[in-house]
Image 1 (cartoon, rainbow, N blue to C red):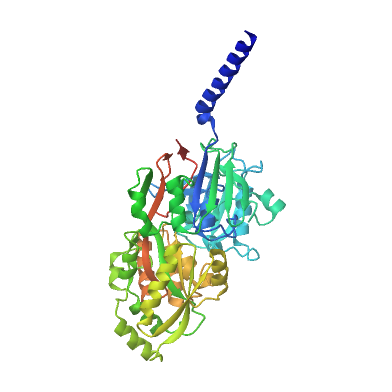
Image 2: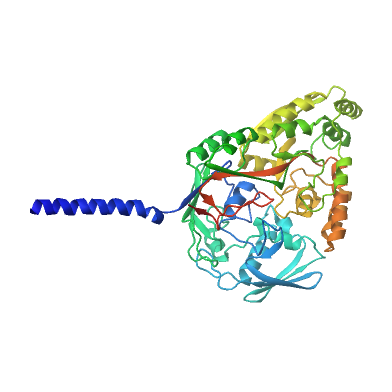
Amino acid sequence: MQVRVKKSVVLITVLALMVMGISGGAMAKKVLTYGQAAEVAGLSPILTNDSASSAAMAQMYETLFVRNPRTNEIEPRLAISYETPDDTTWVIKLRQGVKFHDGTDFNAHAVKFTFDRLVDPEVAAPRASLLASVESVEVQDEYTVVIKTKMPDGLFLANLTHDNSAIISPAAVKKYGNLMKNPVGTGPFKFKNMVSGDSLTMERFDGYWGGPAQLDEIVFRVIPEAATRVAMLETGEVDFIDSIPPEQLPRLEFNPDIKVVKSPGTPIRYLSFNFDKEPFKNLLVRQAIAHAVNTSDIILSMDGLGVQSGGIIGPQVFGYKPEIEEVAYPYDPEQGKALLAQAGFPNGFKTILWTTNSSEDYVRNAQILQAQVKKIGIDAEIKVLDWAAYLNLTRSGEQDMFLLGWSNLTQDGGGLVFPNLHSSNAGSSNRTFYRDAEADRLIDLAMNTTDQDQRLELLHAANEYLVKDVAWIPLWHQVNVIAMRSNIEGLEMSPTADWELYPVDVK
């Protein structure tokens, strides 16, 4: 009898454990895995300027203001309100009770520290241009900061929504230095660990001022091959992906276990030149190349994920006017040959076309362009680099012709043309080393007014000038796409192709 009782007890215990295991699924750790095309360059908002790093940091750091992904309106985040007593003064009230991940307080001193560091020449922040108009940042009291600009700045508030203006912990900088491997922000997730070339793991920050996230942990897995990312999404090894090549999209759209979301966006992909190198200083050469580029072929290769526009400021960005399409150089390789001969290159020339393997469209676009410029006599050797090396070398001016993109996180034309094509940013965010007095004048006019109607006209004028001068050759403007497992809820994408994991849940 005793044996039977023991067996019964054992049986009941085993059954109970099985039931607990089944019902305990709701109590299991919620981990969301993102399949990332490129490894982060670093985890400091001050020292990075790439989309891979931005996506990661957006989960750990916060800005004073954000854009609502549905309305595109600017709303407070770490700030709660602002006033402008005059055209050059911004009085910003800050949220109280916010903690950094290291337990220190977020306050006006942290804002001043961050912004002073962002513009410090010795730090050499790649996006120091975000605060180029700032004259001073002063602490009025613990939760009020007063920022004075040198002139009226119509882009100032939008710049404060940018990931690179996120607020960092002064104590963490003192402890760790540049934060590239030790991020400390106020966001809903905090850094756990990073394995170079493999993954970045963040865990929920239970002290988050907005309340704890629903996810316990998020993992950014580095998966350079797009086909591999798609396959891993299908098997459930990752929960969501972006940077999806067009040819991979149909299989996901017809998979009942996958949700695909598409929307027109602000990112642009472009071809440009190193203006410090010959023969690209010659406008005739640039015009010849512009006539050689058939963007229609490139758009066709995108299978619906690219929008054609001749404007550097594109259709989803403030500053775009449809008239820009009449300014763009039409596809005309014969005219390209004639211009090249007029420039002194009747037999063409050899050059190197730089690109990166961070996403497959970069390599594919380079191959298409290589064939197109060959038709006017330009022999372009393709050079493919990893993302981090590509960013470093293009910033230092090693490149010749090159491909790059810009997400335009401010959704404003000023936030596109000023950092990328104003001479004051040559060698930092201006990787073309483009320096032109008239372009600077038009960009400055657009930047130095807060009247949005005037800004629209001024930005259009700058767009016209830059297109005519072939500062960039726009290849396509992005249709944003994201694919996720059907059990993922709350994941939304903004026109900038940006997303946050704080509201996301795994069912």
